[in-house]
Amino acid sequence: MAELKRIYTIPLRRVYAKVPRHQRAQKAMRVLKIYISKHMKSDDVKIGKNLNDHVWKHGIRNPPSKVTVSATKDDEGVVRVELEGESYVDFKVKDKVDQNQTFKEKLQNKVATAKTGTKAEEPVKDDKKTEEKSTAKKSDVKAEAAPAKEAPKKAEAKAEVKKEE
Image (cartoon, rainbow, N blue to C red; front, top):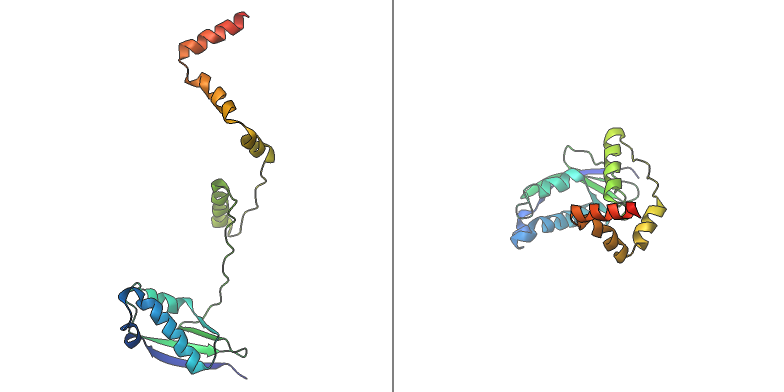
């Protein structure tokens, strides 16, 4: 079986006119998928990026009244739909960002990606530093911070007393 290509002009206004304004573009996308699945006789419909952008271009409240699309059905029964004159491009969904990364690591990855176009190597975390921070008690922190808050004269006086001993 060969690829099947067809061009359709899909009317959307009659359908989304019956829906609240804040749901019009969503309804238009659903109707577009249903229309293509009926006419191409396949349940697996993939909508292209340019078509999606065209429908959502003026926001959720003002989708276009009609759309001219080209639909291509392959041997497996997958229908790919794109605006007429545009070619459908498969794209991979990016992996989710690691939630355990610090802000500094995320920033380094972005900078490295911008420069080279590839992802930077993961920096090696120093486990000792993180353990020390987590095991430090609140009382230790307060004890260390106390001399810094004292008046300079008192700190100097204490330093002189310690030197004499």
